[in-house]
Image (cartoon, rainbow, N blue to C red; front, side, top):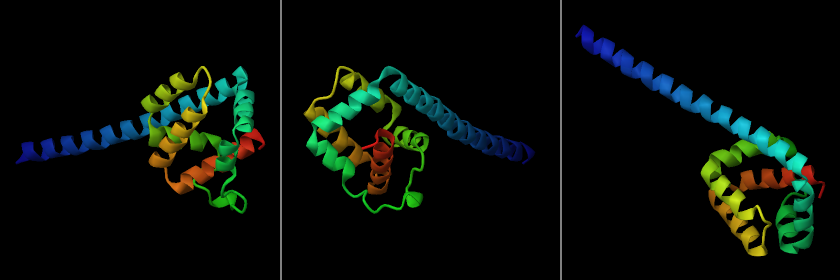
Length: 142
C-alpha cells in the first residue's frame, strides 16, 4: 500500500513538472523568437519592403483595413506586437512559420499573399486576426 502511494505521488509530481516545463519552455522559446523576429525586421529594412508590397496590392490594403475603423483597442486579444507574435507562433506553429519564411525570402507574389491570408484565417479566430490587423496598421503607419 505504501509503495502504491509513493508511485502515485511520483506520477502526479512528474506530470505537474512535465506540464510546467512544457508551458514555461514554450513561452520562453516564443519570447526569444519574437525578439529575434522584431529585431531582424527592423535592422534588415524588411519593414520598408513590406510597406511597398502592401502599397502595390489593393486587395491586401483592403484586407488590412477591413473592420478596424471603430475598434476599441483595449478589448483586443493582442495588445502588443510581442503578444501577437507569441499568439501567431502558438496558433500557426514554428515549423509552419519557418516554412513560410523560406518561401517568401525572395519576395512575395500576389498568390503567395493570398495563401498566407487564407492560412491565417483558417488557423486563427476573427478576433485574433482583427487584433493583428490593428497592430500591423499601427506598426507600419498605414
